[in-house]
Length: 580
Image (cartoon, rainbow, N blue to C red; front, side, top):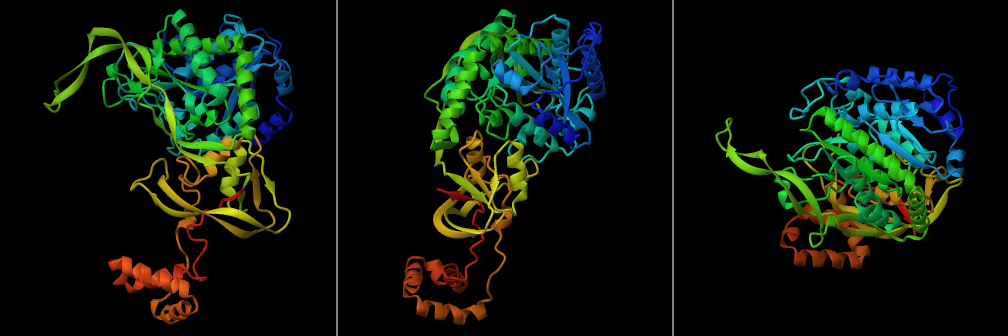
């Protein structure tokens, strides 16, 4: 199946199945058949799309690769004229909208909304303008979708049964876009790299506080997106979506990112780092959104609001396609000249936007379980008031961009992940000695328990130094003059919070492999100090200023060893090098 996808990409989306029959208006989804009580199973969804495929030349379905559970991951494409050649899309300046569903199969609203949306587009019940290309992933987390039950999201108001959050390896796929542990992630990132969507939508259902709104919207944080795209998203694109949804009968608010307090006093925007789908997409100047319907609302209402929002994306995206594409082009051009990049951010609590929030009065009543106070939202006391929304962030950590990164050929898993994101990589054709910047890992913190299969490093401290190093034929050079420049910096810099070092790709270098025996090294250490007066002076100064060190013979031997030519240089030396 992977070969089919590669052939599809080489053909630049030019091949589509030939269809003769008109659209079948009798295609009814399980959602509609159950009057809004059920969501489609994996088999029902695939059968539906195969039937839709056979009914219209405007639809094509492609296989992206094999998922962790062994089923092929598919994407469904729709264009108004049935043309699927990427060259045609580019020539006609078409806007590409990529919709992802079921990343968390317990949140299936987008699955059913997308089925109806594409069917209605084929039937002519809704208009998908000629300048729009729709690409829909019907069910991304197939393993979780097949693990079907009705209790995993205990507070959710329908459907009758649904899938499980983790995939077949119990991975949360919306925490996987940097580390790429799941086969699904590699498949989707390859599709993303080839299509370069202008707008990315990842449909979800929210948890947390109670309020009146059916739909909330998480927009990629505009300061982090930055440039022309960040400015256009914040000032134009997102407000247009709010306006369009209001005309359709839905008052949206930003995703309510408040799980411990009641939101009537406002909240801070969710910050999606590159591990999340929208954070990953923003690294490539894509306008990324995460619709979050409210889990306490009836399933039927949630699905219909998702349908309305996707229609809104199509309408607004089509009407403003030229501005959207111009903003992306501006930022991609500016990226080539950009020299300083932000690795981490914090919320700016001195600035906020005013949001009209429709909530319920909160109170604390006595718990029938514990007898202690518990939070309760009183639906008989709805309110509408303006609250602060803290959606401005400022940099806390920046880094200068090198000309290139050099990665020894032994680190194959890193290269595999980079290639899935469309990174251009070249290999050295001969052994070469170069002057590079090397990082020494001085310190880091790790949690006592794993998070998504990893012990995620944080608070990483490094010391850079310029060294002359011999690289081997076949080692990898990753030049930064390419569209993935920002992605490369946020994954390859060791102090990046969501970088490959944080996700344990390089943990092998954190353990020293060779050392010395004290009684054997004693005589050699004395000889070293005799031949190196400067080191002897350093040792004496350390003893004079550190009483504990002065009483520790082993620590003093270690000090001499680490400042000698015998020290193991590879220990704690980060194996990705900067060519400045």
